[in-house]
Image 1: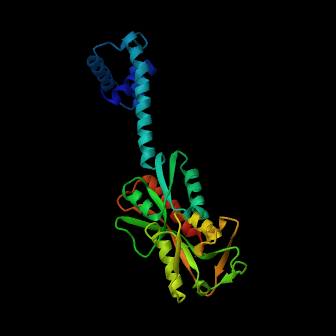
Image 2: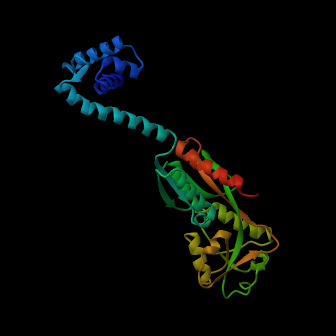
Image 3: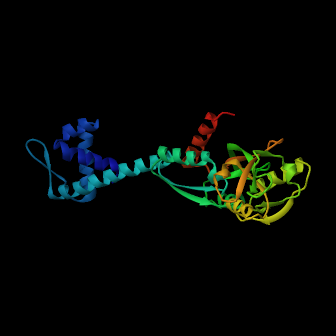
Length: 299
C-alpha cells in the first residue's frame, strides 16, 4: 500500500463520487476506479458501496478512513519535520564558551539573535577553557565554541572572527597605579602576574607573556588561577597583577582597579570555532548570523 492509494481513497470518500474525485486529483476516472479496486483486493474488504448518486463508505471503509486520515497527516508532518530539520529550524545546538567570552556583549547578542530567528532550536550552553572546548568540539560534544584565537589553528577546526578586544591591566585597589587612567606595562616589571595555566588558555597566556616581553621584561609568574573570574579575585586579594580582555571589566569586585595600557596596543581576538567536517544546517545558520553581525560592525 502506497500513500497515493490512501490519498485516492480519501478523495473518493470525501467526494462520494469517483468522477468528482478523479477531477480533484487530476487523473482519469477509469485509472482511479482501478486503484480503488486494487486497494480493496489488497485489503480483502469492500471499502465502498455504489448508490444511485455515487458511492458511500462501507463499515470497513468507515473504519479505514479514520486511520487513513491520521496516516496521511502523519506523513505530511514527517515531511515537514524533515524539511525543517534540513533547514536547521529544529533540533539542538550545543554551544561552548570560555569564561572571558561570556562577558563579551557580541556573544550574548549573537545567541539572542539566533534564538529569535530559530525559536524551535534548543540551545545547550557549556562553559570551559579553550583546551576543553576544542576537545569537546573534536568529540562532537559541542557544535560550536567561542574561544580566544591564537596564531595557530588545530587541525580539523575552522575559526570565524567575532571580535577583537583591547586588553586592560587589572590591579589591586591598593596598588600605586590603580588610580591612574593609563599605565605602561614596563611599570609592572617587578610585579607577580596572576595567570591562567597555558594548557587551559594558551592564547590568553601567550598574549600576556608576549606583551610583557615586547615591553622589555620577562614577567614574574605568580599564583595560577583556574578561570578568568578567579584571576580578578586573586588580584583583589593582592596575589599580583594581570591583564584581562576589556569586557572582563564588567566583573566589579571590591579591591581591584582596571587601567588602560599606555604606549602599546595589546588586544586579543574572539572567534567562533566549528569542526571542518561537521557542517549541519543549524551550525551553518549560527555561523551565518555571526558573519552578518561581524560584517555590520565597523573595523
